[in-house]
Image (cartoon, rainbow, N blue to C red; front, side, top):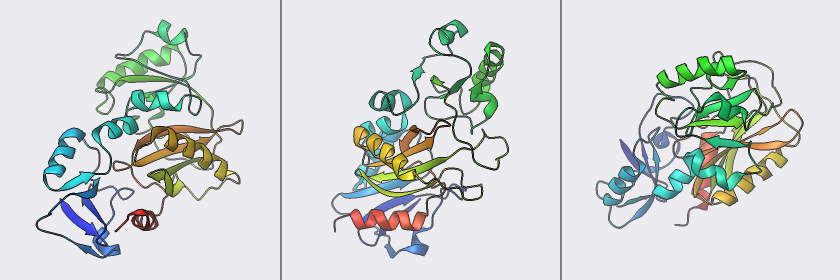
Length: 271
């Protein structure tokens, strides 16, 4: 675990997780020091990948003199769909969260096929067979896979209205078809960075992306989480919608230039 004070303004506690779209060497790009003892209480960002027990991490860091930028309640509001969805109705596809996989009749009473299925925190690495469910028969197969999937089995199942998105050229093996989608980072309500969600593909652009950022801004304002990620996309019929939110401490950069992102954050931090 690397405990670094960046430009004498902000602490970052980080670990290398082995994912190029997430890892970032702060010591290489910024002036950092590593205080052995921390006196007082200082703001801190956690960059250690997925966080299993956020309240425990928050408490542990507080005992070190570091206050994580998002409180446990804010972390939950950002990262758990059942908590952020009520704030974003009208900006994101219609959604129902279940305690267990619903019967097909329950789905058909509220949705039409195809549907989008995921866990309350994430998909199974965007596996299309476990995400875009075409029919009753497909749902029966996907349900069995859901129960045995290492990523999904512990999450509450979520059924979402399937909204066709505007496609982009190219594909990523084992993933849903890429679309015009972007990831945006928000620091206390201000956009500090954004970029292509499908960073693995050749660059794609959209002339009215500012309209998409305006929708993401609405989401950030409603959620009021200090350090937040909002993923937004353009639908096939030309609307901008929110796809997902998360605690930005856990999120990869996707196509967002990381050094520029951290420069923007540091510029917002009062000495």
